[in-house]
Length: 476
Image (cartoon, rainbow, N blue to C red; front, side, top):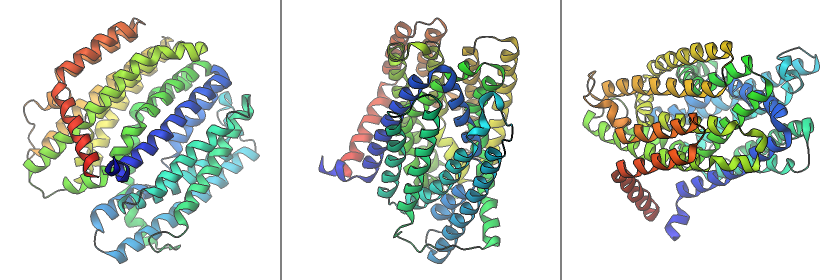
């Protein structure tokens, strides 16, 4: 137990789960206190925030790659790129704040259906501060110093939760935005006060261009990947009512919070996996690492997702006004489980500078989702079918990405059985039971059968996951 308590990855994951619990509670309370209509406005704001998070020109991604791969031993180069990254990101943050202030205080009529212009200044501040926080988090992650990241994450989760108990209606939206701004600013101060590296403003535009050459392809990659999950919400915001966007947004926020703890683990180990799968290493060695990563991570995600789906009917007790959310949430959770199975393949693609190929695959899936969900929106079918289309697009992405990953590990050839390596038959049957339960609006009985099928078919992977986790905890 002493080793477990001293393991920084375990502590970081535990702090992320604490943050997840607070975000989950905050999301439920905000949904309850705002009601479907105002929560639809809140959902649109978070959707716009997600899009605006791609205005950072990729500096947060570039600094991660530079420190993890290209500047492992060159301290002078590390210092230069750290200072250039945070200086340029600060300029971007200031520019965003100016644009947001102009839109709000000049009453520019943007997205009037959601009263968007009333919140642009606070939203732009949040995005700019988030850019800076991401840059510093990636720097500290590579240095292996997670304590400041943990403290900042807890603050960002705590302060917005506190204000929920003191405000209602539209004032609650403004209060949560303001608390997020304040907590993000404090988190950045935690990073820049007495850092373990030299920190200074440095305007080196040739170095900035070099970083953008690395970061923008990664930004395109992450944006195209994110569009698989955000395009459905975008279509809902266009074709459906504010209340229906509220239902969809609640399902999305719960889905995101559910997997936050596991994402914390992948976030910590990502630089290490990049190093172990970079170009030039033997294919057999890389194949073993990628397959192990895929198996362990996807097994963990499927377990969490399937258990969470069985608990979704409890939402009807706490949020009876959000009854349509249960079926949507179940499908979106399955979708995230599907996307988890190619984590290892995504990593090797980044390590070998093939992220633009992944982006191309993502765009194919996004086009599929956009066309079908747009058709459903035009026909005014139930918003639930948008979630089904997103699940279909995710499966398409996984199939194409598995082909690319197989080629990268087999000298350009597709290995036989590549698809069953990432989507075993037992997992697919279990997924089918959960989706049928959602369609028939009876998730519990079908879900129990699906979980039993998964536990039996993946028992060896579950045992390996348990042994791996326990060994890591014991080793400290």
